[in-house]
Length: 231
Length: 224
Image (cartoon, rainbow over all chains, first blue to last red; front, top):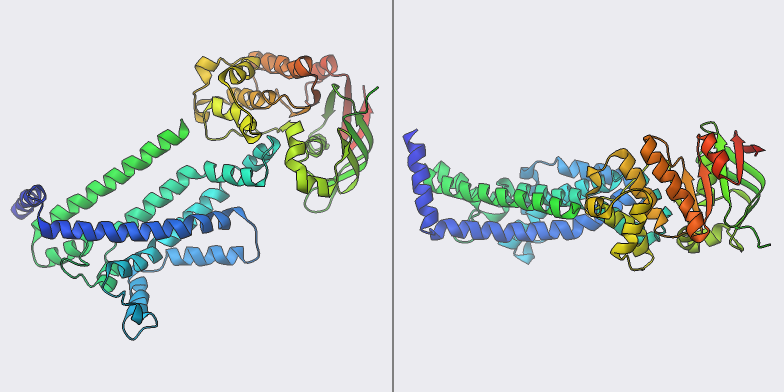
């Protein structure tokens, strides 16, 4: 276990000394996660709400498609995005392969189904009596829509937290679409994979600590949001 | 003598499945009247209440409310305005995931009206709840009986023209039942609301209602 405790000590040193290589990976992670999460929320929340709230032809098929997207292996998503962005691919001229925005697109495909599915489920499962209650109190259609949205707010916050957790911890897509380029597209997870492969546990552990701290902060924020929303 | 608040002529209502569950050849409900509806489960009482609360559209016949014919077009274009005059409290209590005060104020906010603390406190007091104790309490920290009383307060605060109540005292203990009964009657005493009350408590209906109609298999079969 010595290597582990040594690794842990070295990890703390790296973090306290603001090691530039480690923080470059943290920065890259922050950028791609922010891009992917923003895109997932912008697209996923309204579409997920529509999927859960409105009844339209083809709704069941759309639901099935979203659930299928949820179960797609990340390596397949990475492969598809790589194939699209490679120089011979249909979107090759956009020059997104091995860039942070390109990784953001790949990770959006990972986060979007989570937001879509959880939002739709949240809206569907808002109390069936809610509609009757809100209407009987005098709500028009728009007010009913906002009330439903408001009642599903905790679940939607949890959807965002779940998508964040999935995006920030993803390795396959980040590795395939980003290429794990040092100082450029190397994220926390790809750096951990690389450093562990090289036997450099300290850097891996240091980055792992950052990742766990981020997860802790996000969960605390969700808990806080839940409490505030209730009050 | 003023025209009745509600006039129903040959009204039929159906749920999904097209089976007629309510047939009312003729029914007038006067302004300020307390009308009791009695009958077995499934006799059409709640359906009639939903019809009067504009949550259900009649398949046939005509329904006039406050001098206006309420047809499909009126329900589509101004259903929410009608529901602001005739407020229904359903059998199942549903509160919004908000505080007690926010729940009581919700209907006022939907109407763009101010919801001062005094008005909310007054409505809560009507159902026997103290604002200082309950106002800030989240919805999930209420008992079933308290939730029902909050739901009633949320309707009383609106001073509706008609208040439609589906078994307002079911599942309540004796003290809560008394509070609810007094609060319900206060709606007529304070601003002359028309009350339509569905209840299995025949003793209460007989004592407080101007008329009690009995429904059976979707038809009015008797009245007191």
